[in-house]
Structures are given as C-alpha cells and as structure tokens.
Length: 97
Image (cartoon, rainbow, N blue to C red):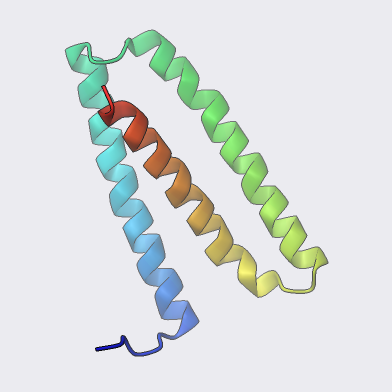
C-alpha cells in the first residue's frame, strides 16, 4: 500500500519531531560515552563546538541559496535534513567503536 501524500507542513513537523528525538538520543549517548570512558571527555567536548558552528554556517548557506533561487519555502526542510544527517553521522561515529 502506498502512503498518502502528506501536507508539506505536516511532513516538516514530523521531520522536526524526529530530529529532536534523534538529537536527545545522541546527547544521551554522547554523555554516556564520555562518562564511562568510551571517548575522552575533553577532546569530545572540544569537538562539539566546531561541529555546531560548521552546521550553523552550512544551514545559513542553505537558507541563503534557497532565498536567492526564489524558493525560500524549501529552506526549512533542507535545514532539518542537514541537521538530521549531522546527528546521524555523530551517532555512527560514537557507536562504531
């Protein structure tokens, strides 16, 4: 059975909800790994700052590109997808050991 087409705003809301759940899961995993010695706490904490800055810059680039191309309506979904990808990459990095 094929899924029914979803209203773009509803889809964005669900994607944002999934992002928040995945983010909270990653925060718990990261804290657990740092607390139990799975990853060194200092370097991991220092790694988070540039990651977040880079993600913000990439999100701003996506937004500006969408506005310049005349499709600013695409920016929110692209930003959520970008952040979900970054969260997934971090989760894979932390669980691959």
